[in-house]
Amino acid sequence: MSRKNDKRNRLVEAANDLIYQQTFNSTTLADIATKAEVPLGNVYYYFKTKDDILKAVVLKRSAVLQELFTTWDQQFAQAKDRLRAFIRHSIESADTTARFGCEMGSLCQELGKYSGELSHLAAELMHKTLNWVESQFKALGKNEETASTLAKYLISSMQGVSLLTLTFKDPSLIQRQSKNLENWLEAA
Amino acid sequence: MSRKNDKRNRLVEAANDLIYQQTFNSTTLADIATKAEVPLGNVYYYFKTKDDILKAVVLKRSAVLQELFTTWDQQFAQAKDRLRAFIRHSIESADTTARFGCEMGSLCQELGKYSGELSHLAAELMHKTLNWVESQFKALGKNEETASTLAKYLISSMQGVSLLTLTFKDPSLIQRQSKNLENWLEAA
Image (cartoon, helix red, strand yellow):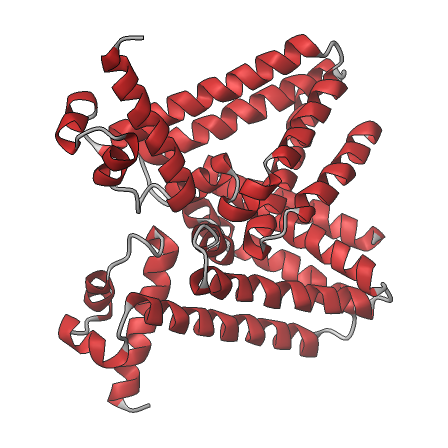
């Protein structure tokens, strides 16, 4: 990787973490530059505005999601096993969720308040996740409508518990909920 | 009401709306003063810091919640009817939720990222809601643990769907979910 790309990546990485840990709104370009160890004057070479960095962060998060989904698609032949992996994945980050919330959910919550491009950006990640979960329910033989309902139920359940986990700073909420959702999945 | 109290109330009211519509972090004291039509210099007479206004906003929201709960407690003899009123209440604000999210949920999401007093403040509103819902399930004869599990399920379901409603700008999600939750409540 060229040193130029390396600097750009460091900026996106730093922005990703700061946006997650302290919200997009309270993250300044200066914060990002400091964390990335890139002189502030250099930031403008890569990103004209904070919104441009956000776009790069969303692209990065989208690629990470895609990688997870592809891994599960290849690792498990059965759609139920893939969905189980998706549910269990939230347990791994339970401690971080108790500190900062769900990475995707909290961005959707913050940017959803704004109209226009910013709110669409965050929604893209949620759409991607919903589509993947829906496709797994279709692979289980559910029709379009049922698959959509089940996918929304699963994702909204996980999002709701992530919020309670953050609010009460209690990672055990996600652990218990994941077990319930695995049982629900067995019966679905 | 004295004119002094009137000014203070206007500031709290304006802060309440702005925090809901554009997040706490992006709301400045100047925004609040402008919306309340109070000279910025006067704000400091009532509130030393933005955190102080937030405290007043949370107190106000807590009083509004208490009023709702008291109304339902008095209006309905049966705990199931009270819980049904709680579920249906979210339908009334479905359009606003699609624009700005859940008033309580989005504050918890934002302030939960911070450690210390600010995150506790938002959590108080969630605690209050959880306690009331729990007490209704206890009135239905559920034991402490079951009442707590059911209350967390109900609230996290509603919070999760509020987030999807905001993200996809689709109020019908809350309407459909409320019907499902009413059916779930019948069987609970």
